Length: 265
Image (cartoon, rainbow, N blue to C red; front, top):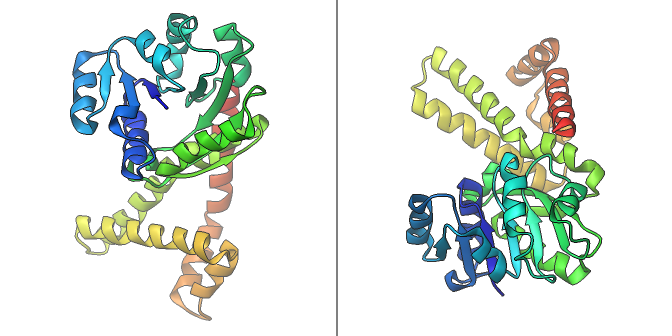
């Protein structure tokens, strides 16, 4: 099986790294293309895969083809490769705001097997979260084949396409919200006298550990919060201020703005 990548930016590199590290693919199984020789050579050196600047060459060889270019370049790239793609190739888009109907129209080949997914940047450290929606021509076995690749750098779940804009809000864009939270906690720790590097480490580790508790215990986040809030203690006072400042509403409003923007792209 030949896995192709059109676009070799950070997200594609994260995906390739995960597949190779988990042993799902070997370097000789992967081919990628980029706009510049510099990027192609850099990725080739890092992963020992075959690279080129010829998108058509990748499209012709790939059994699973990841479209990993920015959405603004999709029309141009698809026009270039649409006649080169094999009928039974699984085409996987990772672009925001480009739905399955867009892909179907752009390729102009209704028989093609199309999948749309939305990974996020924690894929760079193999802790990604990817929402996946499946086109009508894709079989269950083919779906599992793609999911196994996506799960090499985190979790991946199938969602109906009507929820893909929600995926953008809750996982695609949300690392930015979390980074802001970590930065804010660290800033106050620095204000209280902690060295900056140590403040980032304490704040980030606390977020990491808290997230793992949600995922591994299966307990409701509210129950886990209550476990930290001792009667008359420090934590409940902090929670009270966060509630007064409207933390929940601010997060929900931010996600709503993100989701609406995604719908309009």
